Image (cartoon, rainbow, N blue to C red; front, top):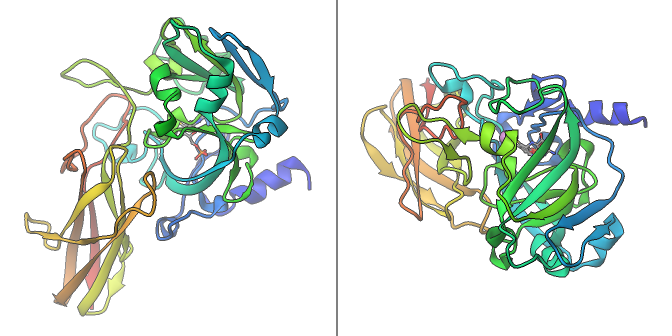
Length: 359
Ligand SMILES: Nc1nc2c(c(=O)[nH]1)N[C@H]1C(S)=C(S)[C@@H](COP(=O)(O)O)O[C@H]1N2
Ligand SMILES: [Mo]
């Protein structure tokens, strides 16, 4: 099958947000399972799928620069890790005034089983010099940028996707950051970063650089468009902040938005996640008012994947009902009623409100 056909087929089940570069949400039912099937996993790419030469350069401020191939990565101990990825722009469409950027609804979030080599092992072999402070990751994708750059020095006509992490985090074995080459047991697909990509658990997925081409240890902070221009919270009333960990969120997956259900009794179900450790409580409101009921929350099946919750809704009267679900995480973060507005529309974790008809 030609690559173009393969891409077409892989994209069919998604809800398209932008055709070229291809950006698409998962269908709502993709939130009901533990693992999102690859063909239902959302896709977010700032540029077209690039050609990758299969080589990964490890360089910069290191004692042992090297170039790795897929075989080299496969020869290292393989780690499997189920990770929920959410785009920082997920939920942008609900912010007012509408921020600039891709108009994501609420389904730029998915969970996959990633397999790869550990970033900290690759870094240990390269041996960063003593004054290394960050690790910069470069994707093979580049081209004209669709959006208006934030940084004046950015060349809009030829931009490369680059991100960095603090060296202390990148080199921390406990962070379990992967250079992943498999997704759900298959080699990575073109849209998800073939032949290998970074997977940074807990962080908004912008950190998980696809089509990884170069890892470079830096002695000065990286300040590219995707680091200090875009992917910054531009708050109206306080200093700008970098987009890092995913904010706590609980979602209602059943009943579906706008569904009609039978009276008396219904088990409401959903998912919940946070980049700041597990979700510790989900509350459900059945009137749209402040009547919060504690839902049953399943313990996480892994440290970086969404959790199931359910609530036994009883004595449901006929009519239209408003349902809300609110998550609290281990750090005590609670979802807000309204999104915290920022100019580029990141990190909307406002409480979800759905309506159902009972007849
Ligand atoms: N090289 C590269 N990596 C990238 C991006 C990109 O545009 N180029 N987009 C990032 C963003 S914003 C997100 S949300 C995730 C999406 O990963 P997915 O398409 O596998 O869901 O990839 C991240 N990694
Ligand atoms: Mo994203």
